Length: 65
Image (tube, rainbow, N blue to C red; front, side, top):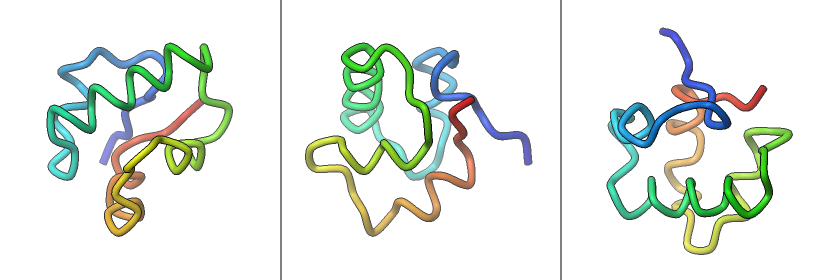
């Protein structure tokens, strides 16, 4: 499975993740804009109301390079 780079991906690419809905995708992009670039994929945990119970599944599809 090819991972999507969350720093360079377009909104629709991230939204294709089966565990990410529109609302969460929007929060990810807002966070990315706020920090300029994620240094590590674990930074997703810093997003307010991020579903930590889905974190392990979400990161199977995403990376931060």
